[in-house]
Length: 583
Image 1 (cartoon, rainbow, N blue to C red):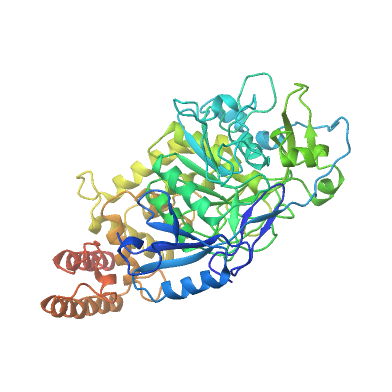
Image 2 (image 1 turned 90 degrees about the vertical axis):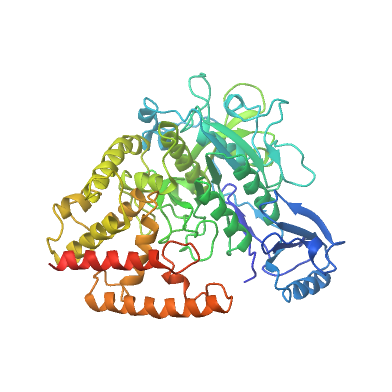
């Protein structure tokens, strides 16, 4: 498998395939330089080959455009010998192969249930009494958006010059959606409410920033997606919707997803439509992403949805195989432009709104459709509390989810109303937990206090030792009367922004060498001895002018690139905590 693999833009249950090696359609290669180095400072023949710098200066990546595999492979071989190059990957093409799974008879729809069954199943209507997503900007990286659609135009971002979004597709300078996929995704997120037409999005007051990275045929390139992500991060959007996947991990994409995560921007990513367990597909496999599987009208995993341990949550994405092959009526209804490629080719899926214009509504299925449901719910949450971190959001939507039926499709099917109602209880829980850990009542949680509380939790859950007052009550975060790993995840989320948490967590992880969730005296002694040895090596290196080595990094608990008394103090705190627990 090559570095790039294939990007999957999930267009109407579409599967995208690209060669995993250089082929006749490869546009070039993507080069990332270490630090602040650039091709201009390198003694390479690249200076006359570089055709484009990707995004802002923060990326420090360049595209070398050349359609000759022989030349490209020669350049890659040369770059691999350069120690200043962080990574190289082929900028391969992405091709959409749409499959018409969801045809239906022409004429009236004639179903006996709500048009918007999926929206009602997640209780978005009840949620709108509390939040409609106002003040939130969502970047939709897709095939563009029909910004003149009457159910969308009021919510499309534009600048003072009436420029709508941005296109990164060569030869298509505007965001007009000539394919249809992006418009359908956009409608699920933020179709306008109370306008007497069409549908209502999950977050009907949210703003949509259209970032076009796929062309009219659903074809795009990795470099286009990297630039779109960079643009979204630079614009400081609130959320990014990614209804596409890459078949294999990409260093460039991983770097960009990490940047978004560090900036506090949730990436809501599709799990994919191959009915297989996630393994290498990105960005779904990245821990920074919130990954979404698809469920049907019965809250069961759809027949097409991918699954796996990296799936966080599920959302409505389509009907059962029988219904899909019959008339597709349980698929997801959303906005469409009838003159787009999909709109022209799949008239049988259209629901005419009688407006006699190019705007209409289609029924689709896929994890591409499930993903914007989650994006919309996240917008509702952030609109209510803009200080919510990504892990706060992940915890809220997972602990408030309704039951779903299927293996490895996350915590359940998302519920917008319950997620909103969980915000207040999460705040109260966070405050109660911090108060419980703050033993000296100085309104802060030190490394010592955190380690003491965490070790008490670990020992309580494993050995039932009553080492901390009200331990079970305090640490039963999800209130299921059991203290387990799910509660630990919640604790980590609640204390993520505490400056002393990261140091303590690393110390505890290092301490529990056999990973049995029990800290023993022998493990304490081993850590102390290891630390003393590491400190000695560090001092020896310091005398010779060397920087901290990789072997010593695990003992640099406070990440200051030094091993000193502060790191020693953390170990001393752990010793005190253990002593307290065993006394």
